[in-house]
Length: 495
Image (cartoon, rainbow, N blue to C red):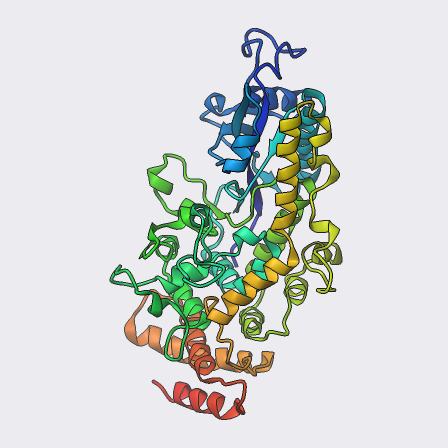
């Protein structure tokens, strides 16, 4: 097994709303650094340095070390009409993307991120500015392997895990990140434009077509004879390299042409030429689904979860990994059970999952007190802007809305899970047996065909294909054994 020295970087998108002279005459700023009246980006960079955090403005980043410091860049967060109307006359809007340095797991990255969020909190209280985020902003995490690519088998597993368990992982996100683009039913019939900066794996699989033709709507909705989630994990397994894996996110759909940069899970940074021909290849897998935030606990909890998930994908044995994926078909296999299976501790599980679904979302999912800043604003209109934004952020995690959206998406079959099907009736020993049979067949196939494919990958793809056929035949009102036995016998007898 190739080694994995996990590294991480984050991008925080938000807006600073402030008086035109909010950052005038700041102590410690020399004329060589910036004008006397700083922009919000210049102020953030200055205060980060004061806090002992190495940082640059985007145009000052050294070419030889682009990821060694925090970077303050511009962004394009879109204000809603109500937000625009609440901005006081003469106040400025500064759209910020704050990019972290590359963290190693050995770093105390959580402590450093806390210092960054404390800097933003200080700016709110001392300089009477509003720092807000909304559904048009994102919080993106890049996961890498030091200067190298994440081993490709691990990358395929990451894609398979996030595809198979999209229905559970959606529950970790804000309501506006539970997406089913192009699905013409409530509550998905009017997708916001922001849907396509974080479209889910299911969207790309339903729209995948080798001929690159736009599929009609009916061909993207699950019904007997159509693809299911195990056809999708098989397609991922059959990807020969990072370029082919990234190509799964290239679709022409009723929603327009889309690519990895429109996806919740983006592999384009691992291609040899980089995204859009970038000179610098990041060599990272990008997780793009999370809504924008500057809340410390929200940031570090999502990063910690991703670290656990990626490490599980790297170290799990094939039988254990595939057996876990079969649990996606079991509606009793909750988000909490998935998080535990991935090695998450109780604190992380409790942050993302409420045990009592009769109550509103746990206070652990709300913003920390430091995020609400209306009390520091000395302008009534700006204070109203902040109060409205606070309310909207809370509404994003209202559990009843999340349940409704996940339920609608599940009932439609959009997740690749059939609401009328029984769970796959397999145990770990069954998966071990299937892999053993598949491996013996794959080794012979690779010898006869003189292929460069790895027998292990061929075997996994074969098992996923069998699981897809079995799952397509399961009915929750019937005994599952005949379907399993029939498909197994046909599969095992194939040359």
